[in-house]
Length: 316
Ligand code: BDR
Ligand code: CA
Image (cartoon, rainbow, N blue to C red; front, side, top):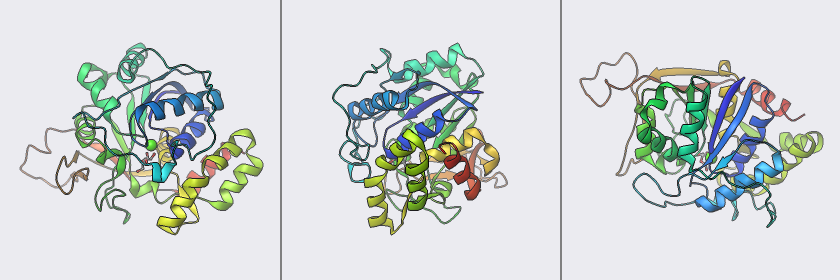
């Protein structure tokens, strides 16, 4: 079983991914860290604590960074995830779970040091907490088993950015942090829009979860309502992108994906800010922008039917 730290900005698809994670016997959730993104840090941390109550997991939840590495608050995604960032499902005033006293990046460091060689970080928000953890304790890079990131867009299956023609939200929200994470000497696998937008949880699938997926299946259905409206309106899609659940699927079974190796950099600033670029192994560019950096894995193809079966089967 892999020990997992889930770094997240819940978020409808984050909530779905966390529910999926807690249903998988291959993964043991040992900590949840929050980061600004789909809403401000107080809202996403409240949502993570609500999910702890609702999904019934034991792992501690620690509040992470409320600003980017450069101190910006950034824009939020209420138009996508609703006013409360959880599809506007009612959230009770009284939430039983309390946040861990440590800051997100500190708890991340502690958990990695307590479990050397055993921890996989699944990061499905901005990379700010990971970059801060590396900055405070660079040695953690050689102590983790791996990092799986939902973020970026490489154009390999025709999918480009979702916040600009070239940039995806989690990377564009803190490009400096993403560049620090991708160029660190730890094994990163990037599950970008190239594969996450290939996997649609359609209306029929969501209704199956509602009708046959028990309490959690009903919750996934409820939480998806306004998110579905957003996809129908802006994408003409009768379903929702699974985004963050694809990073969980990779951690469960990497054979569901085809990956490509090579150093990855992020454009920081300007018109293309947040663009992710991978240098292909065979191209010898005479530039220090690429060569000192480790090859990382970028997912370029996904076995859609098998991923949908894995996801749905986890609840039915
Ligand atoms: C990513 O951005 C967030 O809005 C989602 O939760 C997902 O992590 C998709 O671009
Ligand atoms: Ca997310």
